[in-house]
Image 1 (cartoon, chains in turn cyan, orange):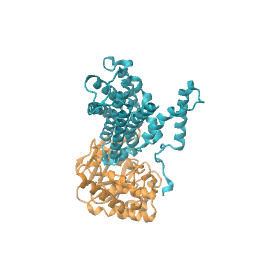
Image 2 (cartoon, one colour):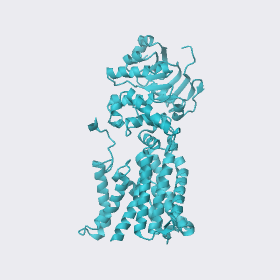
Image 3 (tube, helix red, strand yellow):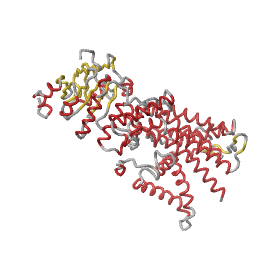
Image 4 (cartoon, helix red, strand yellow):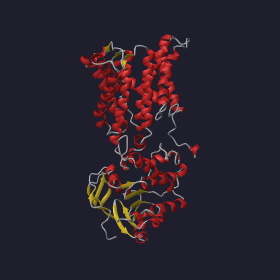
Length: 296
Length: 249
């Protein structure tokens, strides 16, 4: 039971990093990317390959994965960020599909649909993170660091530039802001932070295959943000917690037919999203985006 | 007035399909004065602003800022060249506070830091606060732009212009919808900056406001500058008045 809870909390931490890093561009810059799972996958494969061929140290895998994700995001975002709004969503969806195809078809490197198995245990300062407790500690520290980085960044001039572009890109450009450069840097930071989650995931499950990095995963990460609250620092973590605890909680409702649990989960997710959009469109801890007549 | 104009438009044309938005426009904006663009709806006034700031590209013609061609310029380039513009629909950064709206205008670097370090950052913050006080929004400093009343939003839009170092201001209906007291305050703020060498061009429909604030008027209709000169001469021209109030030529 303890192992189950620890495992759940590790996954919540990893998802919290994923959701927080995606929220950095969705919530603060208004860049709706459907390709976050692609970067998650790239970093997970990077970590797995480094661990099996070079080093199991997180101090090697994390910087390498962050750098590769950031570099890849630059290559992709420089042309695609010139388009706005829904056009970028479509462009990122295409990228997600390309990434999935590469993961599943580049068999020599990724192992194809079978993936890469037997990823060795991660090490940190020579210490093997063999126990769930040590992995959870590292995951929580990473989550805290990522959250701190985002918390600080959104309060700097860079954060204000992101919000200005999100609120009105035409006005931001009219005041001399280089919207394309700001968005490109934001996507690179977001992808690099996402890379941390991929590394932790690969070492935690000791197995990576394309199934974990589909468009469904991108949608799920987005759902975490929407549920928790876009444009808030702690909302995505709350969203990750709910998304992971909901199915876990459902298993304790013994009166539910076990065979229908998965379907019920989907129905409850869907219903929760609909209700949330009606009653809390800005998420559980998000502030309303509409005019607040009561503050006047 | 005999000095070279700050902004010169020469033979500027712009068509949207069959619609002529700018028809061989010649217009000079002399330095240190307020020029009002007047004309009926659809005359092409906002189009001219969009052509000057690079939001639209002219089909032909020349636009020069202090003798330097603005051909091919992007909106960001226009801002860096010293042109600040406001929008008819304000285009505030709605979810940001009043303070953030004003401060952010001065933060142009795309990098996660701005040049000049802490001293420059403090100077920007002080300037933002001083500008907010100047337009009378200190009490709303930490309120989101979206939560402000209409007049306050108008003054926030003006504050974002005031805080820039731009020498040419293009103001699109900046005073529409203001009550008389707010309007007086607006005129004082705008005209108060002329002594610093600022050149202002504004679009306005209220002719009382135009008369009260401008030194020159350019009258546009169907993309053509029909007349430009002293406010009294333009506003008293019965032919122009007929066009303005809906009687076609």
